[in-house]
Image (cartoon, rainbow, N blue to C red; front, top):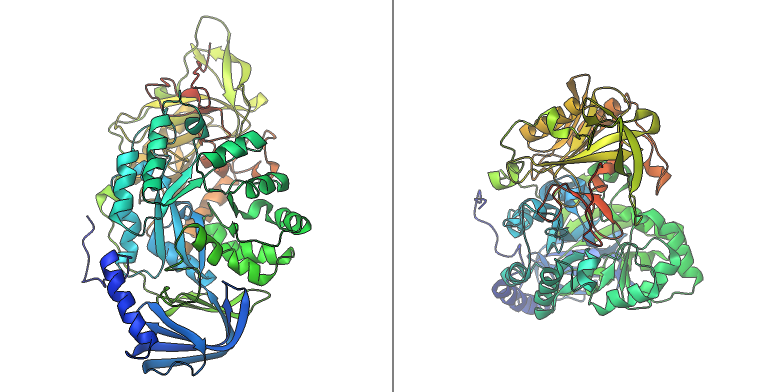
Length: 625
């Protein structure tokens, strides 16, 4: 357990007993029978329920909640403090229905300091990243910053992908019993994180079938929300089956017709910025007038990108620039996600009973944020965070998560030739290879080992397990990514969604050095070239995050990019050319095993001894033969 530094307020988390006492108090404050803490009077206020503006309104606040909203002067009670912002427009604090805070690579308290000046006051944390590293302490981790006074409300959704597939293991295991316990333990738990392993949902023969349906059952029993992940599901039969299975949403829509089919078959659609301009224009052209089943989400966004682009306010501005009314864009990050996640008693609107989370806009059309309030007090002034930033000394269960009890050697990455010939056949993948078949190539053999082929853009990629202590290694050849520069390797403990160590390199020696350095620093990034570490980034919490400010982390990332720019990286055209060539940061997503992936490399496991497996069928294959 994390020990509190001082007595903590009781009303930070949503607790059934405290909730009754809070609302009994709010009732009497609203009737002016008890005093309020403060009254905030604003020039305009957006009611997101009706999408209408009201002029000269007052918001009466008691504790962290709103007790009363109405025309200025209509509340007759007494307040300890009164503030007036006559030139600012009040809208609800922004929220996200689907967010991986781990992908900011900041711990929750520092994530709050980063995104709250952008208006974000609450988030549904899709927690299968840290869950896969330490499932047992998952809920404690996500609630601790709030317990310590952070103004950000985090509603954890335990990960359905723990493990992501039956071919992966280590760090955590969630099934019916675990999900039931999470939902019973805290009212902050809003449902089940995105169900990603679609083959396990529809196929009774899949080894994860019972585990997934057990988690769905536990979620239904508490009438909570089952979030979905429908990447690659674009045919009508699959969309119908996905909705029939109880999946409530999808955040993986890329194309207009796909999004339209999912929307019109009952799915709540969470739009990310990658294709937002085309989708907004297309939905408007189709005449969509009811946007209540749509939200904007960032999903995975690094601290560096947030510093550069913004948080979900960036998504909103994109939508507004492409024709969406500002009021609808605001609904897409307030009442819409709150309704979908069944959180409207607490967030999503400026209304009685809700947390007093208020974004004060200097200009609505451009979404220019002047100030942000959270918990009934200022959280940011302009771009400056002024809220509580608790200092948390994270315990070893959060900071000692890379368990490797031996020295990794170059021999661990050697791929032995299957025979005496001068060449061998090899199975290859490349980033975002979503085909039914893997790539086959004839590669040279030297000294009994199959070799890379730099002239044909062939390098070596490996996964090192960081959970068993044994550092089990799976390795294979990859096409079109990784360093051509001699004696160079790059690796990270950030490898969705199992988050073992991955490493790509031009020599086995450099790959071994990367793995050992990552184990020593307990996570992050390491770039090795010429026999030395030329750059590193520390993710000391879970191997995924750092308990340091965003600008400090960004400085390390920029140093990594600068050293990476000195390396000759291979390039092979693939799914999205904008992600390649150059520094292959997107390899952190190349270890995904959810739909639409088929052939993947995972750490060695009982069902995939060499780690090379088709997660759609369960088929395995040698990497060389």
